[in-house]
Length: 324
Image (spheres, rainbow, N blue to C red):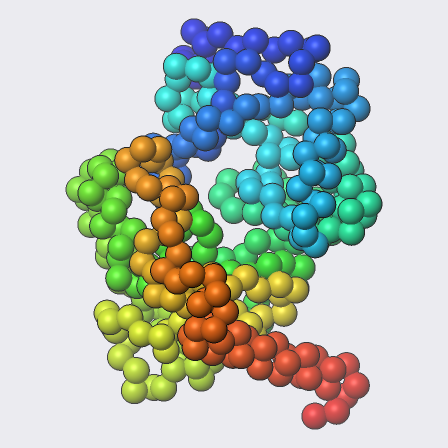
């Protein structure tokens, strides 16, 4: 890549961090310009020379506060996307990491801290990386939005893997109310994040098809009545209930409930590709925390998820014992 030839990157074997470079992601369907996160990159040579002590220290500092750790862009254990200073994200490139060592340190600290590990394995993955995750016991991160086949049909709950956390979306994606109403598409258009008018039109047409496909998937599971319109443009709490019951029927080990979906929040937490243009990570929750735990919508969703998970466990036990 021409941009790399003129870039000045300092790779010192005595320091764990590479200078004049930041981490990010290449362009994709959701972020046409790519992303520069402004995060420092480990120098893999110095990290190995330090016996991975800096990496282990970060893991211990985070694992000590809960029983599970989610690693964003977990493929960074094998390769990271470097963007030299002064270079646009689309002109960056991948740098490999000692993946076997990195996963080994992660597994060791997970056992020591008694902490589950969930890897956000979305986007462009190195070949064989998900198999490495399964072998190491790292849970996959499966999203309703992305569980589609080549025809745009959404996978049935039983098709989700058991060694996974399932969720509607992530902090970088639309909330379910925002997805349904196209709020994320509107914000992207307002901020000029589409490379062309044609790409915006295509995104809106695809969203309309996805709404129809989701409704059909919910109907197949008996979560919406057949009288529910296939092209429903209006959003309702019935759709939230259907979506979370749908995911709760999967065999996945964990399910993540986003409060934004329960409370009807349309604006997502973060809009990738922006810094000061959008109030990323600064939006307040619609309710105070003590109000959230008493909110009837949150309680209804928690009850629905609990009911579906109990049914699933009973069905699994019956299948194992041969009793109907």
